[in-house]
Structures are given as C-alpha cells and as structure tokens.
Length: 295
Length: 292
Image 1 (cartoon, each protein chain N blue to C red):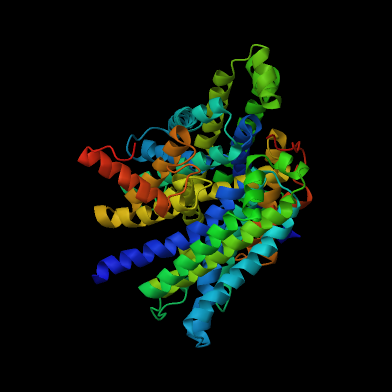
Image 2 (cartoon, each protein chain N blue to C red):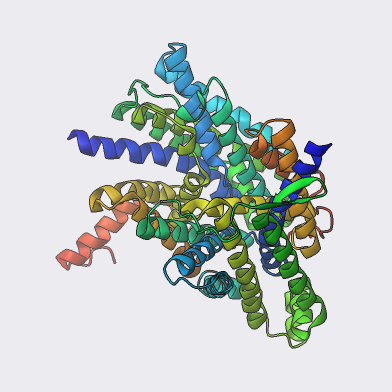
C-alpha cells in the first residue's frame, strides 16, 4: 500500500473513532454537542504531554488520554445532564464548554499556549489505529445492542415516556456522553501522533460540527452509517483534490440538504452488516446473470 | 474610582452591540424555540456588505448602513425559507433545526473564506479616533454612536412588537404558534417577518462590529456573546436580551481590567454554563419544558 493511501486511511479511521463515539451520544440519545472538539483536544494534549514530556509508551498514553477525556466529560456532564436542561440549552452549554476549554489550552503553561506542542513522534501507524478502530466499534456495537442501548433509543424517541417507563434519563445520557468522550479522547491521541503537532486552534467548534455532520449524514441511530460517512468525508477531498475551504462549504450545504430532504440520514436506522452485503451481492448477482435465484 | 467608571463605560459600549445581536437572536428563539447558529454568518455578511458599500460604491455612511441592513434582512429571510421552513412544516425536533443552522453557518463562513479570502478588512474612518469625555471618563465617538443607535433600533423594534397589529401577531405566535394560527395569524408570513427584523438588526451589528474590529470571515464567532447575553436576560425575552447584553459587556470589561484579559472569554463561557444550571430562565425569561 502506498504511503499516501495509507495516510488517508489512517486519518479516515482516526476520524471514524471519534464519530463512532459521537454517534452513540447524538445518534442514540438525541442530544447535540458542539463541544466534542474539546474532548478531542483533551485526548490529544494528554497523550502528547505523556509521550513527549514524560516519555510514556504510546498505547498506554492513548488509553489514558481516553480516560482523561472521559473524566472531564463527567465534570461537564454531571451538572448539565442532572439539571435536565432542554436540548437546545444543553447544546449552548456544550458550546460554552468547548470554547472555554480552548481558551484554557491557549493560556495554560503545560500546553505551551497558542504555540502548541510541536515535534511529536509519529506513533499512529496503520495497524495500531486499525486495532483501536475495530475495538471501539466493537464496544460501541455491544453498547448499542445492550439493554443500555435500547434505553438510550427510548430516551431519544420520547424522553418523557422513557422516564415514565422507569428509565433513569441522567444515567443513560451520562453513560453515552462518557463513552463518546472516551472515543473522542482516543481519536485525539491518535490525531496528535499522526500530524505530530497540536495547537489549541485546531480544536474549534467547526470540528465539533463536522463530527456531528458525519453522524447526521450517516444516519442518527445507526453505527455503520456514521462510520461510512466519516470514512467518505475524510477520503473525498483527497480524491477530488479540492481546497480545504470548499470542502467545508460542501459540508455546510450537505448538512442543510440532509435536514431538509432526508433527516434520517443516508442509512436511517439501518445497519450495514456482512450478512446484508452478502444478501445484496447475491441479489445483484442473480439480476446480472438473469437467473433470478434470489426470488 | 476613575478607572472603575472608565471600565464600566467601555463595557457598556461593547454591551450595546452584544444587546443588538442578542435581540435579533432572541427574537428568532422566541418564535421558533431553537438556537439559530446561522445568525453569526448573517451578521458577518452584513458587515462585508457595509464594507464593500463604503469602499467600492463610495456611498455615504447612512446609505451603507441601510444597504447592509436590507442585504442582511434578505439573507436572513432566505435562510429561513431554505433551511428551516420545511423542517417547521414537518414539526421536526429542535435538534434538526440546530443542525441545519450549524450547516448554514459553516456554509456562509467558508463561502466567504473561499471567495473573498481570509483577510481582515478595515472599515474606512468615519468617526475618526476622536473621543469625548462623559462623567469624567472618555468614550470614543464611534462607541457612543453605536450604543445610542443600538438602543434606538432596539426601542423601535420593541415599539413595533408591542404596539402594532403585526407585532401582536408575532407575540401571539411566539406564545403558542398553533393557537395563533387558529385565530387567523399567517404563521409563515409572521416567521418570515421575524427573520427579516432579525436580519435588519444583524446588518446594524455587522456594520458596528466591522467598524470596531474589522470585517473577516470568522467574525460570526462573536455571536457566542449574543447567546450568552440572551441567556442572562432569559432566552426569548427582548428586554432581557438588552439588559443581558449590557450586563455581559460590563462584566467582561471588569474581568479583563481587574482579573486578566486572557481569562475574559473563559469567564464568559463558564458564566454561561453556571447560569444555565442555576437559572435557565435568566432574568426575564420563561423556561418552558421541552415539548416532545
């Protein structure tokens, strides 16, 4: 595999790791976050400081970065989710959290302010990223298809009815937020060690929105949909070789178009499974050969 | 004492612009019950229109202001018709509105970035650097004009909403859109009008922001301060938005003088979160439980 293709794949999978987490949160509990870039930033800085300043090995640093982001998510999540803020107020609160965190990173001594941390070792190789990607997706899948996942779906569809049925809204939402923050932290750790430098202004609410864009485009309530959207979103600009800003213009347009024409996203609630691919393939093959075997 | 006075005056000058933005933002919130993140983009484009009217068309300042108000109003109206009206007809959850608004915001910001570039455009000097003294503290002529004009604009807006037939329809729709429709309010027209009004205010704030801080693609960021102001006053309340804007302006100015100017924004955003937790309805707002 050429060095270039490998690079695109790594970036796409790093992106997908954060998107899987956010899809468990936004897609399955129906709350929108504009602050997830902050969790990515926390993961990136934690891992970067551990490997660069303390000479920690990489994989434990990634795990610690995830845990750190998760811990911070509790700090913001416990008060806001316990207060049962309306969903739009919650979104504004996460926006405030994300901005406050970025300004903090710009002013703390250990993060070296706006200069950031340059010269990180490029540890994020394809095998490591791939293993973590599969691991995160596996955990997310188990989470979504567990009792907790079903409770989260109930909360998303109608939180009043869910609460009446005895579901603890706070627990369900906090658990999803924690999981999504851990994923974002891991994604951030990889991102830092792929690009090899980090600066506070890399983690703005535009990044948070792009994560949300992947979840929305892929389909809220699906896991494979957002993953595919994340991979496609990361690969398209490479294939088309368009400037970064036109990519963002397109993302904005796509978000509006999806909300207007197809709010359930490209995949809706459906999942892309190996079984489904096999069935689709057989169906297609039957059509092509004209034998109509799948009837 | 002298310094305290000066800090408060400076804060009020910034707060006037926050108030202007917060009123437009709150107006939309009061009727559609969602946070219109695209508002920053409209303000930014209003600022650009004012800038180009002054530098390319060489029109007088008043005409530039009017042009940018009209342009922003048209954009705001289009924004509603394209990005929100079909969601509204489907009774989509507010999550969808916010995503659509965020999409619009990214679209507008990067469109400007891609076509006009990321440079900072300084408005030509209109009021000069001169300042006048007021209660023993000095205030720039631009700031003084901005705050007076902002308050007049807000007053006219408030008069319109409180005392005209259309204004009553807007208030009825913001109270309960379905019942107002039963009583013969043309909801679609009222919502269009609200977006136009908010757009007019966006044009004014865009021009003032441009004169104070220059016009650039990411200047819509400052609408974050409008959200905070609106939350202080109570989301959806217009008098609240004005008071909230002035309070935020003064608080920020106090923090940057007496604590640290670096921590000003951290303070504002932390204040926002704390406020949402302890008094989500703000000073004058009504906190409605979310409808399913």
